[in-house]
Length: 259
Length: 106
Image (cartoon, rainbow over all chains, first blue to last red; front, side, top):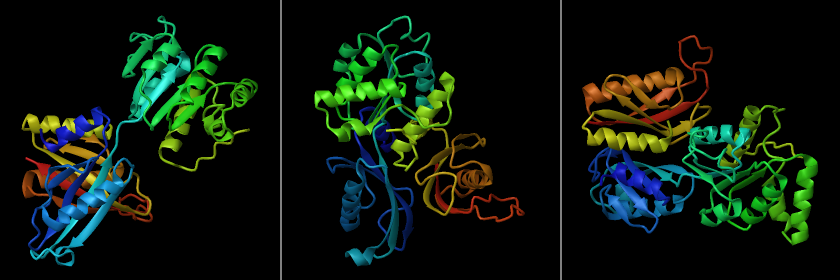
């Protein structure tokens, strides 16, 4: 398997890797421009950028980037790091992380549009609805997966890695709440739940009474989306997508929330 | 096209022995339309996949990539200057500079 196939495989199996590419090679540097090395999370490597002290340095550097969204451009004078071959090397390192998951509970109008936008935004998208009439590939050709099943049963089977984004938009308040109650117990990067201020306040109060700490309650994006005066399902989906992008990019978006 | 698809597409081109050039933004300063790590593939017929920001900057990179793929046949580091203040030189006015690594896969 060559390095690019390894990257594709790593993305599919949700394992973080760091790709290092030699961008400039001067003097007697051990490898040429375009030489590549892939560093895995256990520190093992595929390919080489020349071995020796510089490779060790690159691996150490790569481990600090592992699992983040960061990239780094480093320049080394080989004699400075004790390599007598002399010359210099610039290496571009980029962290390649797992594709974030986007779970959309509720395959109604907004869920449908959001699943389409989610794919454009490079999420692995799964739509879950307990109504087979709504949750099917004919209605929803875009997401990676469409699950027609009772919400609680579906959640049990889903994986929730740290960078999971969940949007709750079912057709019933009771379902919204039961899904919310389950997923706040799991790792997440983003949880958004649709609802009027009254409904949201009630659901969050229910969580408080259950003993959920305020920090967790505050992290729930509800009412969902950034305020852009959205009305139609497509507009609301865009507003939710905007909020998700802001969270993914750690942007200090002004969410203009009432709570 | 997302970055994952770029890698998939690149792996596929290599398997089919189709020559292609990979362009990656490795450094960006000031206002640039895309972030470090953004990628684009350029085929010998000029067809592109993905984007490093569109506009004249991207066109500059596309030309450099074709030269790299068809003539030079070796990697190059090129600078795209997007600081054409008034747009008078036909360039982009985003206000930043990007360093792009272009690399042919022959």
